[in-house]
Image (cartoon, rainbow, N blue to C red):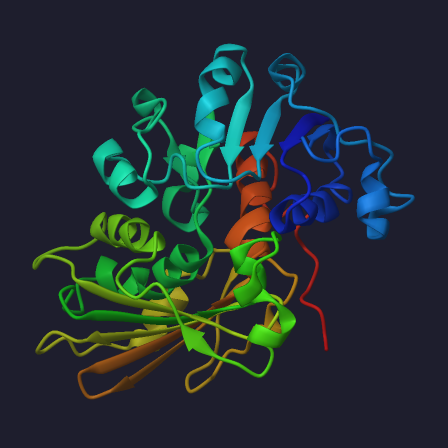
Length: 343
């Protein structure tokens, strides 16, 4: 059994980890922390876990965390990097669901996150936890930077085109929409029901922190011209889900069967579904599941890729568990085989 700790168990990604891990046949949940809820039974805060989890939240104690095989950080940015050196020295493995280890350049990190990095010596070691890109490295890692939700949908959607060198990397557009849970569980006036219900808006234009992460990902497989991405996120009046509409322009003479390209690239990926030609994936098809559903459309030189995920599962907790499975030599689908909710 894998002894698991979760730091920050009261947010949406924390409870999503709990929901999935209580069903995992190879996991023993040992420690769940919360400074604000220490001493309170987890099932008091989340009645959906009543009868399934008999643990109470506790204060963060690095010594207790270090007794576990793997520690998930479902915390705000800047928390995990304070404790990672001690945990790695103690032999624990770490999966950070925040952004502390996603960017390889500490200067880029500081520019986008507004704080110096506490342990930049681990940025090169940290493995970016997108299994479809880094499966072999994830299997041997002790520190995983779990991808952001927008970067997961965008990277999986554009990866086959850029790997094959079929599109101009200088003319990429990612028009993305997210459910409100992507902003976290904390109370904010602009995320309240009356502000989001029956409403729709863009935000973070040229200023969203996932921009450098997406560019870094796509840059690892880009050939030819420099990569230039226009990324515009939008807020949907929904609880969960991400819909990414991606635009690219084919190189002259790049005639190829893009449907076959996508089907071939993702044929052996258990959590990427390439839909039939002409399809339009919907958020309802991936709700509460670990799948990414993709459809590709072509008209002349124009390519439109539709990529949808559940931001809390494939965009966060589910992908983190997929990474854990790989790190411990398990079937990567273990504990993640649940189909999406319908309706």
